[in-house]
Length: 209
Image (tube, rainbow, N blue to C red; front, side, top):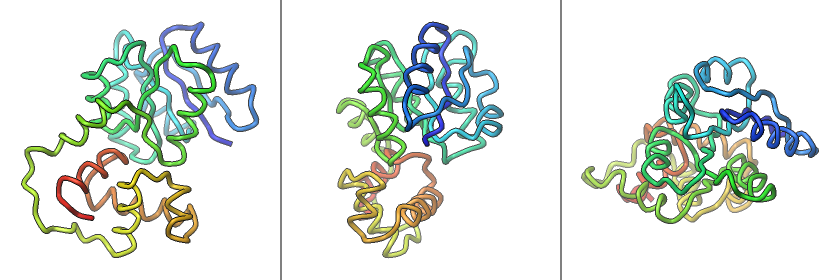
């Protein structure tokens, strides 16, 4: 069961999402909060697999929430919730380590699909945001450095660059999904990134694979 932690300042939206996810056999809401002031400690205590974070909240914003979480935890998946395709804020959140975003007006099935996608290693976002992420490393000089990646880690990274989810990477390389996650953690550490989108961008910019 996928454990989900929700941050949104609109009580009705929190209740709706809570009922939606708790009404399935696949998801469990482990917490619902109207602000993200204690996001890092919430994640440590409640141990979610996926965090749904409203990007625009009073007080600490969703971007602040991502920053707080990533200082302590680089493994939990974070999906930003937004009313509009606010590319600037979404890009900033992804740059800080969010894994993707979903519009709050999306259908229930689309929200569920985004959570499932990010849990399996995907990165839900539009093409405009993806382009900005790819340009994130535009100021870096490409080189031959491979960052100490093993052949297997390079194969996993190449599969991610090809757009595969963790499950698809496992099938592609004939390894278990737990082994894929271990390789992903090592890749993130060696590349000094916090998300799949950052890893893919860095791999493309520096021609690592």
